[in-house]
Amino acid sequence: MSGAASPELAIVVTSHNTRELLRGCLESLRAAEGVDGLELWVVDDDSRDGSAAMVRSDFPEARLIATEANVGYAGANNLALRELMRSPAPPRLVLLLNGDTVVPPAALRQMIELFDRYPAVGAAGPRLHLADGAFDWACKRGFPSLAASFYHMAGLGRLFPASRRFGRYRLTYLDERAVADVDSVVGAFMIVRFEVLRRVGLLDERFFMYGEDLDWAFRIKQAGWRVVYNGRVDVLHLKRQSTRQNPRAERAFYESMLIFFRKHYASATPWAARVAVEAAVRALMAAATLRQRLQPVSR
Image 1 (cartoon, rainbow, N blue to C red):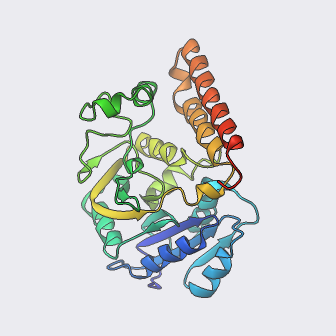
Image 2 (tube, rainbow, N blue to C red; image 1 turned 135 degrees about the vertical axis):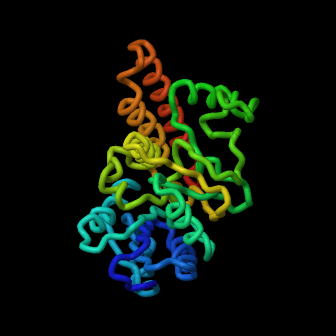
């Protein structure tokens, strides 16, 4: 890790009870190539598995923040982002990175070059794949408007993946290997210009988990910046390993839907449709909560 006065890239890695996955992530970052100054922050969000102690002993180059309560994804990232905003020598770019990712050596340089080539790009993310090699659809997203959400939940995106109308929730019509403007990339690996962070502000902590990346991308695009998906760069995402450790995850998923809808769409939605949307999301939340309570303790 370079000790440059003003680093090219600051990485904020968040983790919750995934010590060995976090270790793998940090080891992959040690092998990063071609970055002109890299500042590493780790925010351990109230882990009880020794994650913070592991970072202190095995990765002394990391600036560690260990919370004493589970503050959620947005809250954990913001702890480090606030420190960066107070820095007299802030980075040019900031990467939000999940601790359940593995980053190939050349990936950071390849993503940085996208910002070098296109000054209007405010945020970007790579192609993510899962442990079995499957594509992680969350890495390129359309905003969950009422129409896009309806088409997705009705299964029309799966039936007509090449359709720009029916496939816009997951952008199924966009090639996985494309480099293209999108509505949002995923917070598991999301690089933003520091200038964008100053203009748009921190993550919205009303989103405990899920939705904060969509909200950030929405605000970034409102401010006039491009959000770009770079399908030529691959990163491994060992998905849901952290959320499985958090009993609030299931409920937080549906709560984030309501927060996003109220913040960005409710004011332009007719009253009857607003009531129907809120009722539908609450019904889904109640069903998910019931399923979780009925699951055997061993699961």
